[in-house]
Length: 167
Image (cartoon, rainbow, N blue to C red; front, top):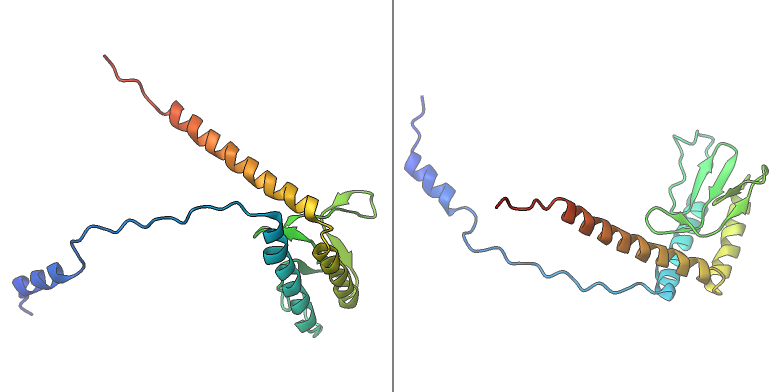
C-alpha cells in the first residue's frame, strides 16, 4: 500500500494554472465583403483549385467511392463529372442551367474530364471579366438580409423569454 503525501499533492495542484483574470479577447471589427473581394479572393481561387484538382486526378478504373475527386466546385458522378459554380463554404450556386427535362439546376454535367476542364477555363475567363458580378452581389446581399433577419429573430426571442416580475 502506498502512502500519499496529500500536502505535497495539494501544493502541486494549487501551483497549476493561474489566478489572474482572463484577458478579454477583442473581436476584429467586421467589414462588409465587397463584390470585387468575393470575386477575386474567393471565387477565382476556388475555380483555380478545382482546375488543379481536375488536372491532378487520375482515372485508375476505381469506383467513385474509392477514387473520389476532391475539389471545391466539381465532383465525380456516375457517368462523368458535375460542376457547380458557387460561393461560400457550401458552394451556393451562382449560375443556373437547364437539364434535359427542362428543369433549372445549379450544376452542369460532363462526360469527360477534358470537357470539364474546358468548361471551367471558360467560366474562369467569364468570372474574371465580371460576368457574374450581378449574381455575386445578389448572393452577398442575401447573406446580409439573412443576417438581419436572424438578428431580428433573436431580438424577438429574447423579448418573448422575458417574464414580468410579480408585484
